[in-house]
Image (cartoon, rainbow, N blue to C red):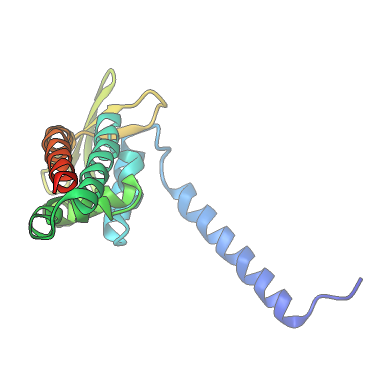
Length: 196
């Protein structure tokens, strides 16, 4: 067995230092099974410019809505590309392509949050925790700036932010309705093309 090179030792040392740093950072946070732990993880993700890391701390219904949004946006975009004539394709595709191309649901959430100004709002309002009220599976965090954030305990015990659930759910339902129309139009365009 050959001794490790200087370069290998430096790489191993750097990896060890990074691992210790990550462990120390995580050990400063309360558990995410506490409302303040979930809140602090959201605040950190937004502050660091990695809002996709806040996705695990949205309530379950909001997460499901993101999966649904991605699903129907992709179906609609694919049908438009495959079956719509060029003029209609360019006009209709824009409504779905940005969401369809966002990637996995955490990235989709980050894109929607950025597009709708939610990230600006969070950056402006997130601050230190002034109060925590827990009643059963619901919790409210009051911040030093006077903003209140509501959380709901998810089945896995992690607390999820409820702030954006209604809007994400409405978007998911809209895209599901849109898919019915896009599917019918795609079928009509396809049938019209075969009859020519």
